[in-house]
Length: 165
Ligand code: CYC
Image 1 (cartoon, rainbow, N blue to C red):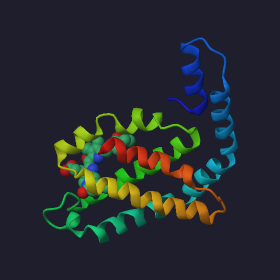
Image 2: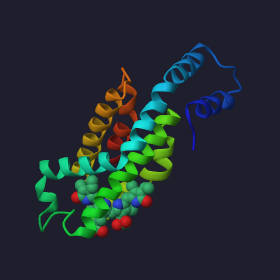
Image 3: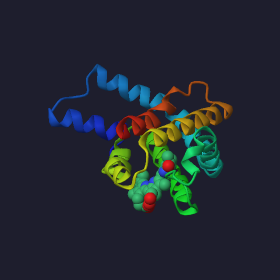
Image 4: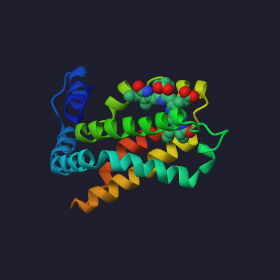
């Protein structure tokens, strides 16, 4: 698992170079956003269950066919699996937010996931929609917690969406 600092070190170490201006700029921006990242993690931690629940109900309100008899989230087992997946996304997105790097998502969440979903008939489009709904809910809560620029919150959620699509 890599973070913003270890991935930069790795990139410079393979070519045996000292940090240049670009590297220092990216370190500066990572450390400057540190407090905001921690605030975001704290906000998510204390609201995780509600965020997952709200993302699920908004998704099923928007796409009610998912929970009808022919839908992939029909039956309580599959409904629960769907909320559990949203919970995985939220937890790993929080790790990635603190790390300032999406590598943890690639390694622990996304590897082989599309194939698993395809083989189980889990629809990708609605899953991505669920991730995007969750992103908006998280951003609103992080903003309400006093973080002025919440743009950095997009990264892990957009990464999951992109990699699944
Ligand atoms: C199933 N989701 C699964 C499965 C995996 C994951 C591996 C198959 C095994 C199981 O049922 O537990 C996902 N597992 C993960 C992830 C990790 C992991 C991400 C990383 C930590 O270990 N269905 C929908 C919605 C969507 C959904 C759009 C929710 C947003 O219609 C999810 N995922 C969903 C459902 C299943 C599932 C319903 C069960 C499918 C089935 O068994 O038929």
